[in-house]
Image (cartoon, rainbow, N blue to C red; front, side, top):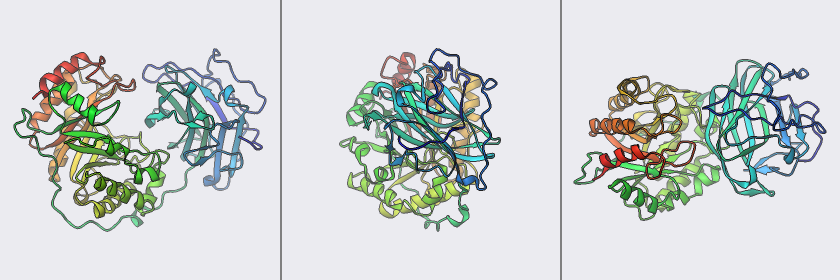
Length: 517
């Protein structure tokens, strides 16, 4: 990066308490040209030992404040259309470049975690943009956190090349009640490098009441998926098959479990608005697949956050959603299930429902746009099991029966569930946001319930046949109301839920015995 940079970055490293058993490992970023980086072996400073920097002059308008630190090489001058240059974006606040990418703004291994603290002008919401790359060109997966709050989960840092190195620009929305904002990057696989971090005071969100579109005309619930005739199961069952993610993988998993898949989970690309509207790769991979597709469709691309939802509700990106609907029709998949803005009640996706009215307006508007092109599309209002990090999925965020066909919930045996005995299962099923609550909510609205993603999780008990058995029994008990369920079969280290590999042999045995024809 070229140009003249400010003298004080206002970015200070601090130790991050281990997350999920990860030990903290930190390379201190260079704070000014000519300063020396702390060696990798140096002990990371704690928050108490971090020296206070010079005071920041608070601008008259907090929305004009930006603070940034970035590697001073050509790496990431442009990534995903976002410009990283000395003369771009900094209205007030500070900006600094480290001498080169080799001196490392930050670098940490697979078992490490790193956190940074910004001094901000005032409490409030801030947009945070990170420029990430994988070390030595090997793909990486990271979580982005702020204190104990998850901002983005399972973010994949790609291996595509940019100016001689891989780069990914990603934005999240963070909030603080003080003048200190902490941003952490926690790797779950690979070795990511943070090349730049920028924090900008977030502008106010437009009043959602002005963005609510007219309601759709009342209609009959769209048909879902019929259970296969003569099936030993009385419900529709599918899977997400990681790896090649195509028809062949779906067929292999069906052979593994002894029953073909009725549904295949698909995650539509979310890199850019253009790709959301025009990319068809995910759907084309399932050419020849006899079952239905359940497609996870983002409300925003990966580089956006919730502050962009008002524009979606106002129709600024209608072309992208019309394009997606047209793509389904062109692929002969017009009757696909679409999980629009899935897991919205968490805090790990950019479209999390922090502003209930705006999220509801955006959901309604997008469904209206897509249904005008593809009326056979089946809309799944799909949240996450348990306590919500953002909106209450059973409250005012619900977009309305006229724009919802199925009510779904993703349910993993993760780090905060640990379903290992009857008591923990009962809590998982009947507790706040539990499976029974979702089923009852769906029934109250005259909808079927779905479980589009479920599985064991290495971050929880790991290989857990008890959980598999209990999920099967819950599906059987709700077979008359169950639209479909899909096992999330992923061997990657961030979840390690795969049943057809070496990860979970006991769970795999129970699953095969229960799901076989």
